[in-house]
Length: 272
Image (cartoon, rainbow, N blue to C red; front, side):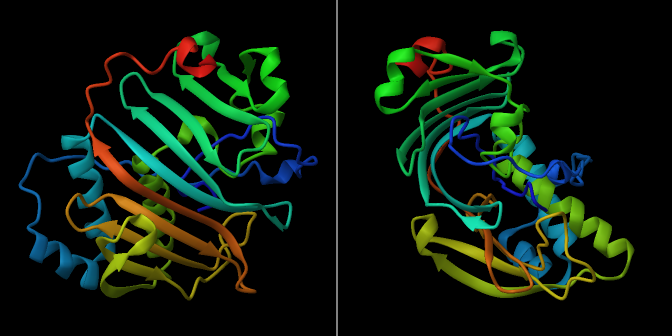
């Protein structure tokens, strides 16, 4: 669940963090959901699934995403604990496209040394293009390995796993693994307005009573928010056994399937 958001997934490539323990490179289950082409549940049925069958609920969310979403613009708020230290909050404007997998991120608050980053799968030698912040911008756009040391020491999630769908798949994978051990405990906390997600009405689910802490971070408590209108996982908070925040991720101001013209996923867009 370390790579949950999902989420949440972002590489502050030039952040001045110290080295991270190599043992953090732990594979996280990533669940694949087959689409049988059948009708999706109604909103009332989704509420009932959230109460009684969280696995079926989350699989339905992913199937709907696959059918309806080709990309989006959004604002992402995140805060993470790295090397035991809670980092400052970050606010990032992001453009995302599914095909080809493309991510452009522009830090609005909490930027380290990277002001803007771009990753397009199969382009730019599969490197991340980075525009440094401040005086370092004089260096121009630089390239970094998305899975290299800079990326791994700067974020809990690589840019290659950015996005709402990856977040949902990384939520579902550990849920399925726990369910096989009869140790999945997810409580439906009702319908709430999530301020951090722009006051969107959301279904709120709480996973608790972990049989074992998940991943090297030791996640033992997680809360998830799913937008009632779109079924997107728009929020999540992860904590350890001591109640410390390990990661918090919120997507808001989401514009689904924008026209992306002119193309924002270019070197010129990074360097502007």
